[in-house]
Image (cartoon, rainbow, N blue to C red; front, side, top):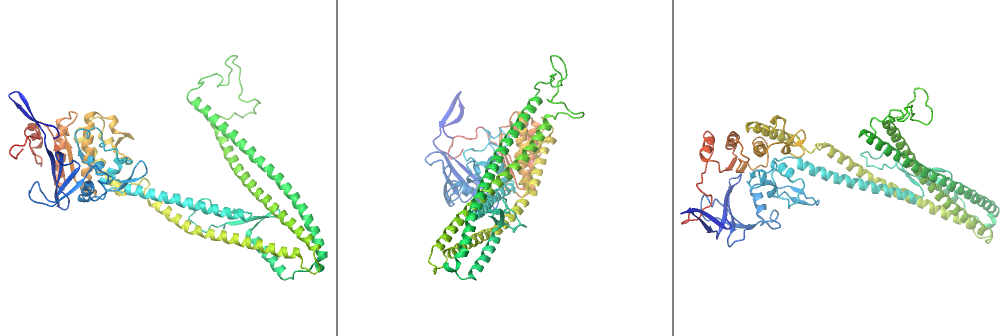
Length: 614
């Protein structure tokens, strides 16, 4: 069709004609009874990527029909309105799913990846059980996606739903973590720590123990709300009194000054003790980390020793049996004598013991780190308090040297600082509470997400999917027995629920069967999909095309069984098309008692046009 045409031999010489023009016409009909004729140029003046659709049976009923041009082999052929593959999918009433590429993008499941499952061409189609499909589209799990579409399975939809839910889960976890960080930042700004925060999303809100901010107060920790109450009480007491004048408050100011200076000294001593305690606790963290590293190293060393021993290292050594290989005296496994009944731990026992130690020290390390963090907050609070006490001392001294009739500077500043601190605490408390309210929506979304995930099938296969796979697998096994499959027992073959490939004890069938049995399996595999469409709702077009199905010298009985099986298609409104160069007499014998339509072609399929006829 592209270069030369063999016209046969005349007077011992082979005649050849140059191909000037050639094209393909195909008439097809969909489920609604609409017929179209598709025209494509192979060689000639028209570009071969231009396809003309005649809206009517132009081959069987020649006439004038409306025509529309489409393109193929160009970007958008499956998505744009003038792309032929989009038109063809619509004509077949197929809603092609969006599938993932290896780059993580979405792309349509192209027709080129679907058609090989019911149209097997001679060049590459008989090379593997699952047909070869184009790879340029870079579709992930392309064979699996094509099977799921043709059989109308829920698995791909469930997989997409699971993927969307997992994405929602990741986003919810990120939002939850962001809210937790925000609460911790508020607590840190308030000079305290956030307590009872659920680090992982929960479907119950509010929790039994409400999250709070705890702040250091002297040597103790109190709730921020308690500190607010204390400061409000102190504010009310001060507001009930007038601001004293210097002359009236001199003696009390002197006494308060002495007390404040004493408090500064005491707080500095407390700060020093806190710093010493922090240093000791940080050293303890370092010691636990070192000990944990040693334990993990011992675990790995024991595991390595166990691996070597299991591989036969020093197998049968006298020393391993407690005997010196030189003097044959007893050699103990320990440096100190063991009490009666005591034994040295085995490698497995040592690994188990060390693993328990590792878990224990992991817990100790986390607790030690929390203690260090709390101590750092205490030190920070102590320094702030010392700074405030020093300011108090300065204000008291200024009061003593002020005019007798002026108000006490210390009393004024005490009120101002108290008002400032109280407002800050209230602002932190309100901000913390407002942030907590957002967890209610997050918790509700998390609960809905968990319910949705729980309702999905564990392996994405619905009950209908499993029924279709059961029908398909049963058909494959039955056909293989009819076709004379002999490599193994056909009853042992199963269809994988993960790859949809025939398997034997978890291994792909193709690696364990003969070449002729591979051809039989391809027959059964694709015919089985056609037969599933007779009993279940699928997207299968109800058509099967085999180009030279008798490969690898399959036996007559096998080919006859294939033809007999295929002849049942017409009973279900389906069509099976064979192109074969089988010897005519034998072929007619196979077809003698079968419902079929035989179109014989004498000589070559493509011939030189003579007087308008082939």
